[in-house]
Length: 358
Image (tube, rainbow, N blue to C red; front, side):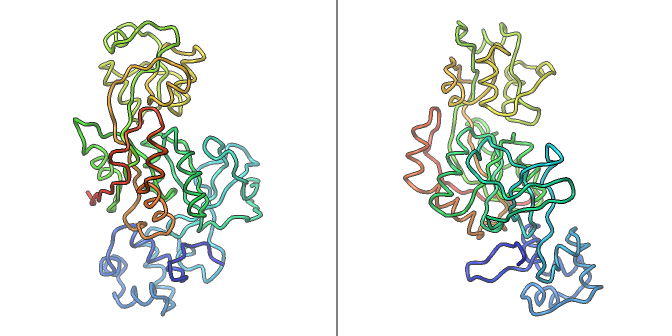
């Protein structure tokens, strides 16, 4: 059976329909780009017509996807690595995103108890297939509590959740290329409340939705015995920083604090990794969120408040997996869980915002 999203009524939407919606195109727009009648597009999407070879190739070119991916004729959907595996023999999970099945190299940061779907020698992925790819939601972001969100969502919805630790720029790149369903970003501040939306308009080519997780505190995690407690003393006196990767909001925050780009060198992939680097003496200080600093037992100097949002394409809003995520963040129970976390403000948790195309 083809690995595709299943509609609420049990039918399997055609990959052309899913891809067209992901691009934000109407049937007329797709027909015009492919040079075929609109009635042909409608009949194919309604699974009432098998197109000619010429029409199939024209649609594939317009949608910028392999023709085999759009017209699999009931065969298993092709699988590709979402990103390069770390070794020739890698454990993987499978998940379907916008009609395509991806292989995800297993990462244990936020997925420590998930059984893998198989082991892949290079070019020859072989899986046991214990999980349904169309019942797996894929998230990317740098929220230290993303594992809590993933476990709660899996428990209340029955969907499996893969949560990957990525900075904002990397998460949005995965979203823009159809490799994840949802990406997190936290660039908006009280002084620039539209920053997340502007970032999405600049990076995504189709309408999206922003789902508020929380507002949180970003600041400086200091070495345990540091006596610095002001931004000015940190800015002037700290010589070694644990630096996040370029493109992350934490890297941007540090650059604004210093008034210059931080020194090049080793970078740290997450808020927790920054706090651990400071705790272990690799750096005097680093930019992270309050929860990571406090859980590492480190002093924390607030720098700014940020809005943490989850972004997903508007075309995926009716996907049952995304609907389950919206319901969870709108629930009182989950707001109560987040309220217990250091630095999380849940006043607007669950709010939805539409973000149009550029």
